[in-house]
Length: 259
Image (cartoon, rainbow, N blue to C red; front, side):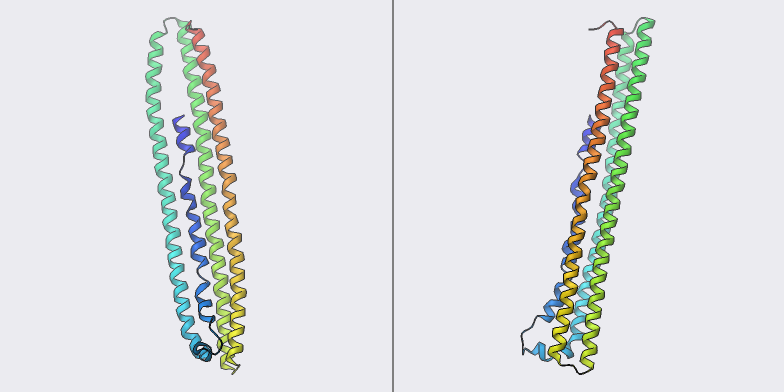
């Protein structure tokens, strides 16, 4: 039961590390619109063509800084995931070692009570049944946890890929909007028209980015079925173990002449 409880209480708060990408990426679209949202007749509008290169360089720097922070945070969370996994496995093995020692002491106490050959044979069967039940439980739990951890890691990777793709697509759209604005300015197109076109292009890019972000958020829904399946598999392993142990105990009591 100790092992089962330990596994059932895995700190799934760590899984919420995936949410960091939403906050960071959601901020990426904001600087460009701060540039474009100026009033009619303002100095920014009059000098839109002369300032666009300078302003977009600042935007690009902010985006690059945020991307660097995003990548750093993602790596930190991967490291935490690995450390937590290692610590849980270590605690699991430590708990099993303690229970193995206690079980051997219990076997020794039972062997002292077995005086006839029939009783000794019954005790041997009991010990064999218990060890088989323990092995079956541990094997199922280990396989379930390993599969669950692999699925979570895969979900983390998939989310990272999706976020990177959304950010990359937004940046590409931004580059195209900027290139067109620069080209239109060089062609002598009215700055008001250039600005309006630029804002429209960036709004399309932002809307697409928000749509992608919402799709990425839905990936979190895939975590719950993993937790449900893990719990069901572990609960069944524990229940099967209890049934096997209870049957073995009853048989041993009969062999030892106990009620």
